[in-house]
Amino acid sequence: MQVYYLEFFVVALGLVMLMVDAFAKLQDKRSLARLGILGLGVVFLLLFAVQSPSNAASPVWKFYAAPDNLSLFFKGVALLTTILSLVMAIDFAPIVLSKIAPPDQGAHPQAGLGEFYSLPVFVCAGLMWMASANNLVSIFVSIEVVSITFIILAGYMRRNVGSLEAGVKYLILGALSAGFLVYGFAWLYGITGSMELGPITEALAKPGVNSTAAMFAFSLILVSLAFKLGAAPFHIWVPDVYQGAPTPITAFLSVGSKAGAAIVTLRLVYPYLTSPVLGTKALAILVVIAILTLLLGNLGALAQKNLKRLMGYSSVGHSGFLIMALASTSYPGAVNALSPVAVFAYYIGAYLLMTLLVFLVLNVLNAADTGETLDSIRGLAKRSPFLAGILLIALASLAGVPLTTGFIGKFLAFKIALDAGQWMLIAAALIGAAAGFYFYLKIAASMYLDAPSSSDGAAIPVNLLTKVSMVILAILILLTGIVPNVIVKLFS
Amino acid sequence: MDPSLTLNPLLLVSGLLFAIGLTGVLARRNLLIIFMCLELMLAAGNLTLVAFSRFHLVDGAPAYDAHVFVFFVITVAAAEVAVGLAIIIALFRSKKTTDVTEVTTMKY
Image (cartoon, rainbow over all chains, first blue to last red; front, side, top):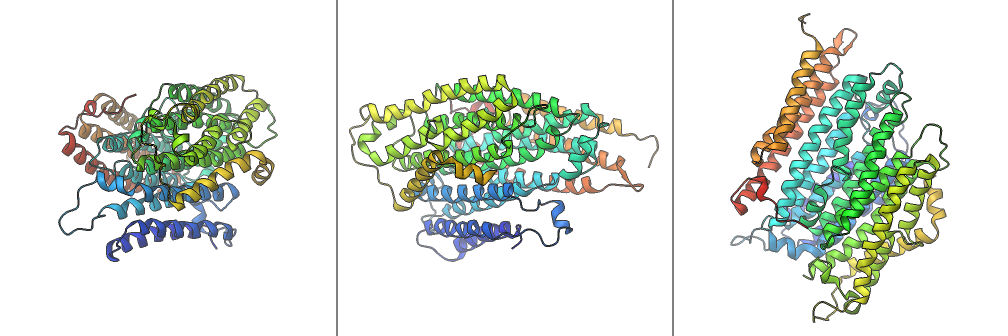
């Protein structure tokens, strides 16, 4: 099977969901989400049936990369993230319904919910396309497919001021980043005379390349990608949008959008890093961004009281570790025993497991109207030992406690930075990791040690699908933390 | 092609457009004006693309890759405007203002 069929299937699934929503007169629209989960699950299995292209000369490969392990891995990440976000969206349905317009006379009582379940599927197609885009045009269009759909989703609860604000902020900053991207691409095209990444890499490696113009294009493109990745100093929107958006969408945004931006960054930054003329300069910029992101993200989280906002800062901090892995690439004169791309991919995988697990729990708390501040989960262990245990595993992994996948991810990032001799980066990362230890474990301690904030002691109900997803993610976190060899071998 | 036309003035104009757009986004407070300035930035990118395309000759004819890109940028910008105006209208309905300094309920 050709690799680009996967995106066709996902788009078709999204259209089918819209049609079913419009014509099938469903009693309970939540079954649409179940249809989506099923369909995306099938596409995920089809990932393993992808064959290498039979006709390598076909014009398709000019804007769509032939399948390799990296792009297939990121397609898998996109699919899993979408599936889990839909699982959350099922629980979140009552809140979305209460925050959009009250139904007209005679309309379906769940009017407006169908699109909430269909749009993430289109985002998923965009994310999968990003993983394979190898032409400036297809990179731009796939990024915008994702970002425009996210604008709608972030502002979906239009009777809620927070959600609207999140939508407006994402709209303005998303469009600003698109402006930088187009201008940067225009200059990149002007310097290299090509739209395809292959010829661009060759042109940038030539000794005669105009390095001022090339670095100008690099800076513009990097500004745009830093917005999407949530890297400092362009991370200011992250906490606001994360706090305001509906919780399933926040989860989707923090993992899906970041993974997509990460693979595009990898593809666009590599031609610069491997160029003998521009490599050192590009690397210096990346190192500065990584240090800033590590410090601002992790230190900013210390003062947060809102859990979703805290996860926003945490996501910025993790971007710092990602960029650190990238900035340890092919440092002139250093020998990397470990491939930075493998570390990068591993970190994204680990980030997916632990962040989505935190959001699964937060989403259940949200749906039970428990609130999303630090105070609201005080003494959670007495009320719902299951949720508290799951959240503890996720937080331990985010903090980087040994025997969890988060530890292995951080360890690998430190290892390649060490191999590359990036001492400044390591110092910043140590400070960041220490701050992270404090604020993640502060939440865990408040769950287990403090007295419950409210007198309401009833356990919070968790439905079966959510419970199963939580247990699977928790097991994967521990498994990949205890026997990482298997995974590392898979990547190298 | 008019031989007196060179690449540099075109790049200068597009650079100015980009700078004006960026300044507007950073300095203005009305969401609609900010949105117009964002479109100006995209237009600057388009102009740069067309200019480079015009002067990047392949076998004596301009390369048309960038022209195709421009069409995609215009289409994407149109989609962004459709979504953006809808959100701005929803915001106006709930807050009766399009001033960005009023859009700050979320703080620490």
